[in-house]
Length: 244
Length: 244
DNA sequence: CGGGAAGTTGACGGGTCTCAATGGCCGTGG
DNA sequence: CCACGGCCATTGAGACCCGTCAACTTCCCG
Image 1 (cartoon, chains in turn green, brown, blue, cyan):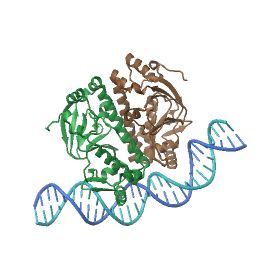
Image 2 (tube, chains in turn purple, brown, blue, cyan):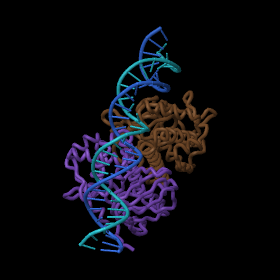
Image 3 (cartoon, helix red, strand yellow):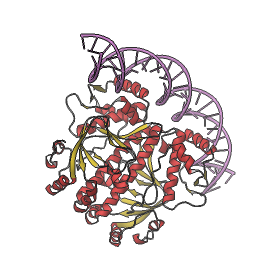
Image 4 (cartoon, helix red, strand yellow):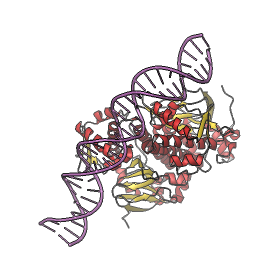
């Protein structure tokens, strides 16, 4: 078992990216949370096609949502960073259409799925927050669909690196050598609708432009503005986001 | 001005696809609805990048959500059918990241965006319904991302035709000659991440297999099971869905 | 009868995929 | 200490799916 963290002292809340909650809401969230759990890198958090899974918030570490075709082709739908909510689809729609896999070792806050309705009933503001999280995740998937459908391989990679860089910064993960980057080229390829080989060649070409570095598991973007121009990214900033 | 329809007598509610609401909820929805409006085929319902738009439910007709790059490349994110909710992203996240355009003439129920919070507060079940709608739309975008990222052109077209066919049937639009199909090949191409020319050639090839017909603005799929196999579609059915 | 939108077809080029092989890094075990 | 295997990154060669350019037809509507 893992040492539990009280929600009111959640380390995520102090990074400045998340909107504050009232003490009553925090108390409810602490009741809503059943336990904490951990998963190793590469392990499955949610199986494709299974129902009855739990609700989680990713407390630390990275993960990704994916869907696969029968012959094994895999599409990564989006990457999950600390603060992201996991399992809402299954809960609301009744079946898991996608899988979730840990990219690094992760810690998860597990919630009582039978209390979700209580949350909406007794704390409508938290219900609204969950809608916010759902809409925000769809925004990211929208962006990925635009990339895969219309951007060239070079633009796609630039866009994804920039997006991940910003999101990681947003939850306080940046350091002097950039942000953690546990995404392998195979993951990049699966997320961008490219083959592994072409992803590698294009990534090398992008690196040749001198706009970024990936070293020792960290990503550093030297010239975000140039990358943004290359990716043709409109860059709408996200205001304070909710955290359940 | 358009003749208004009382929500309790909404023609959509009688098609069997939507979950029933309590009389109190229906009364609230009627207050929540400010007016009805219409838009012609090809007109814009929501502009990319604009904020302050209204909330709508598509009452009749077809539309689509899209995003564009600066040089004009356009990606259709998903198609909207009667019963679909429009404008939640803008409301919740604060800015429109995508546009919405009418594919046919449409009728829209417009809601008071300032009352959305009232909805969550006074009728949590309706708040839950809106989360359902958001999660369901993301499910469709997930499926489209899987198609564009990992399916071949032939599989993509098969998948999209099947998906649209099912959704149109689901809201009672099917007839002896199939379902309405106002989607041009240009729209198909924009939705599938393909060029117009290649879409045409692939569509012809699919038609040559004898699995479907598109004639007089209607789509008929003769052998859904074969199309499903071709598209490698897991086909998770959707239970009764909410309607706001 | 004219004009524009949608659909169709052929030729050609290129971006991306597949196959194949190599090198670096690292943990494991002899 | 070193050999070994596995994962990841890298690189070249050739094939193919798909994009681009261009021309034409059909249909609809004014």
